[in-house]
Length: 568
Ligand code: GLC
Image (tube, rainbow, N blue to C red; front, side, top):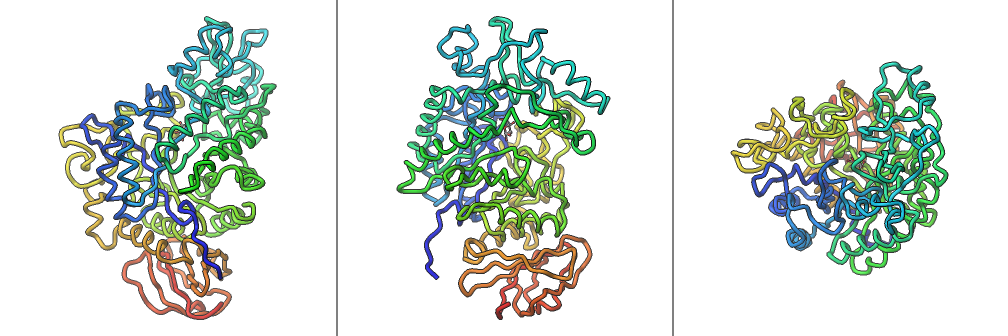
């Protein structure tokens, strides 16, 4: 078999850093770039290949950095461009890649572009953002809803009555249109009203944003995580979204945002052309090191998701596959997700998986700490690029945030539904000192530290052979050293256990079997084809025995990687 080296973003593992919460170097209670620099050795020790840093741009922080006032700067809270350059240099010295967030859908309302745009209807930058006239009755141009809530405008009355009939207790996210009294038009904000949407149909906007991309590529970044990548193109006719008939039954838990099908306010087919152009910019900088485009997408199906690879693999290298986040956590549904993903990805496309991020509840809270170990083994043994959210390698859990310490605007605007994202954004737990070693001992971090930090922290878990950290590190080392894991084929295997997911990863003569028990009960798994092998790594400590695939015993919540001796 010819063995070409894979680009780093295929063979490697990406670690997400939420910079406010990683490490506070200057004692203001908020993490910063210098803090990240001081922990690069930790990332090397852990064994990841790249970091994605969530936004650090100048921002009024209405949405904690996803509201940008200058795409080519660093907020003083986090450092400055010089600190950023040092970060890139120091990371590259350690062979760590740096991916940054790119927020193309919206600026902050304080961004000079929007300040110009809102000045008057005839301002040259008016058309940089999305403006529209009210309906005859003064209500917003259509029924589109803001995802983070908090708008002062309400959707049209007819639509609202329909929703109220379905659920009298609904919590309105509010219209995504905000009235501007000075210029007598509404502007669109798919998220907060402090986040006005850019008009990507305007060539001047595209040119300016592609210049931003070049700015960072010139500074040496290895790629971008593109925020809400498919929101940037909307229906040019601004048609109403149709109601979501399933909402009353399935989606009420997410507030009223999902009460409509988002077919017109995002994902317009023209978005593919823009992503191709963006990819062209990245490719023009990829002679020395491949630069990666990872995109956050809100999609309905895996088929739609796969379309963002591009028909000629010329759009996103890695459209985020979020399927595990909301999945029923059982062997059958996880296998279905993996196999559907594998099936729909265009030829030559590369899968990816995530277990958590800064918008989702922590995996250890969703699944429990024992099953989170199995989930980590799944993530780090599948075919495709794994992305690990900071702290998940420790088993960090959601933290209960007292009402007076709530920070997330989503929780403030759409309260009581558990949509708030603070619980999974709490300070990284470094040691058992005050505030888990996040910053100086006398400084209270911006969000509370988890109560269990004296056990769940880097320093303690480094010393504890059975810790989540040691397991994650071992899995990372395995993945790196075993071609079957980082580049081999994937094949799901039939077994007689409903509770277990078993698959084969293979490259050349190396064949690794992964067997995962999703239940708390021990299982004896019989795999359809006979074989023998050796357990190389188990989520249960010290199991290194010889096994037969006709009767493979797994503890409750156990996952194993087995090297097979014979062909199956
Ligand atoms: C993305 C980000 C989220 C942010 C939103 C608006 O979904 O992940 O944190 O609030 O975009 O920018």
